[in-house]
Image (cartoon, rainbow, N blue to C red; front, side, top):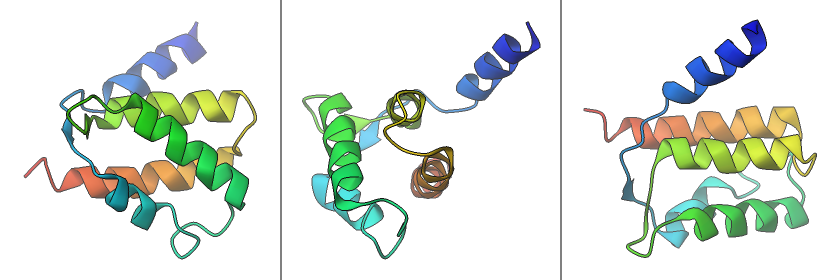
Length: 99
């Protein structure tokens, strides 16, 4: 029961408000310069998953990114460390919209 509660409290901390997010911004964020633990296959998997989740208007929320990355982690397609590192990058990026 506690695990379930912590899942929902973590999930609710991420904004559902969608913001513009270009493919170029995504590429810059997930390059090996910023997160060198992902191999090229994983980088492409993350890229496709996030771009696929964006709306037709090119917008996405931090909550949607969280859900995509959590699914990849739970499917063992990325490690828990990669998940945490990516979430930090995306949290930093999306923090510019909360001002």
